[in-house]
Image 1 (tube, helix red, strand yellow):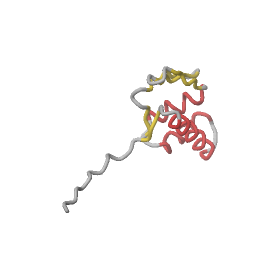
Image 2: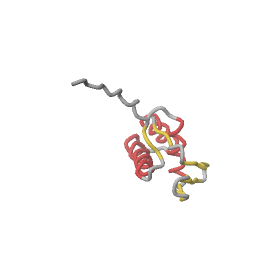
Image 3: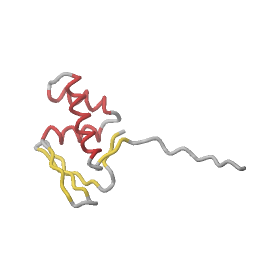
Image 4: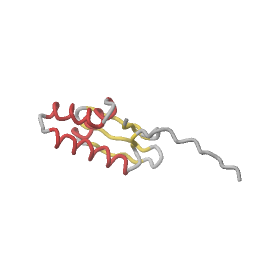
Length: 97
C-alpha cells in the first residue's frame, strides 16, 4: 500500500494541489491530474487499483494510466514524501558462539 510519510502534509483538490515537506519546509506543487493520482493512490489498496480508477476517470488506456500512476508515485517517493508500505522488519536471530 502506498502512503505519504508522516512529515508530508497534502492539500489536494480536483483543481490541483501541493504537498508540504515538514522536514525541509518546501512545497511540491501538483497538477490536477497528479493530485487526482495521489488521491487515488491514498484511497486504493494497490497501484493497480489506482491505475484502473485513473483510467476510468480520464478515459485513457490501462497501460497509460499505470504509467502515469507509477510516475507520480515514484517522483514523490524520490523526493522522500511517500513510500510503499513495506513488510515489517524480520526479527534478527542471534547466534551464540
